[in-house]
Amino acid sequence: MASRLVVAATRNELACHPHFPGGAPRVAVPWALWRTPHAYFLECGPGPALAGAALAWALSQGGFASVLGIGIAGAFPESGLSVGEAVWLAWDSFADLGAENGGEWLDFPDLGLSGLPLENRFRLELPEGASGVGGTTASAVTGTAETAHQRRSRIRADVETMEGAAWALVCQRFGIPLSQARGISNLVGPRNRESWKIPEALCALGRLVSDRLMS
Image (cartoon, rainbow, N blue to C red):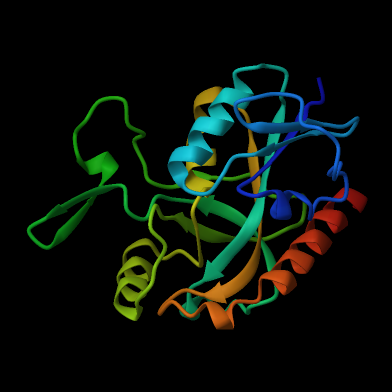
């Protein structure tokens, strides 16, 4: 089995990787999994529940030494990142896994429940010489300026996605390193799909991943 697993929420995001096999048939169910001489490719679906379940299933098959997560992301306006660029992530976190407590937010490490990680910040592997930004993973993506301000103030993340922290938690439990690359398709805040630049984000992501493979 190839030692590298590449995972993304959608097939369009997987297609940014230069080794993705395109129209080749998938080799397993219940999730779409493709095999090439270079890597396996997993389409997990959007959201942390699907992302975590799919990756745990794939890693349980054994034989993987590392995971690369790729996809698009929104950037918080205060991050200084621009739509149409691509970045590596140095860490990821859960944005909305916890509890409200009298106007105060409790992250899941503060809930006192067994079986949960001790911290809500998961370190990610970076390519040699690369710098990374902070990420946060939401079950429901931000759609207002108020929510964007609250999440940015509390977590200090630069980008928001729907899968990264779930991938990181699963990889932590399996003892397998995770790298994560994201193309910036929009700014986090009021929902305005007309302003999204998904093709540009995917192109930037493809270039970033290709540059890593060539280095």
